[in-house]
Image (cartoon, rainbow, N blue to C red; front, side):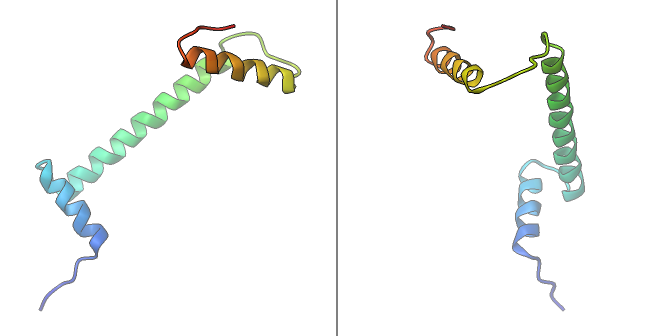
Length: 80
């Protein structure tokens, strides 16, 4: 009797084998890495919330200035 392994599971098995892990250990590693990323995003979001005075009103002009500064900084020219 043969068992057919779906392609997705075969891919998972191959990736686990390529790093010398069982499928279970490989999944645990993936979940752990995902949780670390989620924790880091939470930390960064909270840092952002605490980074300065709250802005009461944000309009088009505010976002245009933000975009302009971002474009300048991404080109290595620094803020306006």
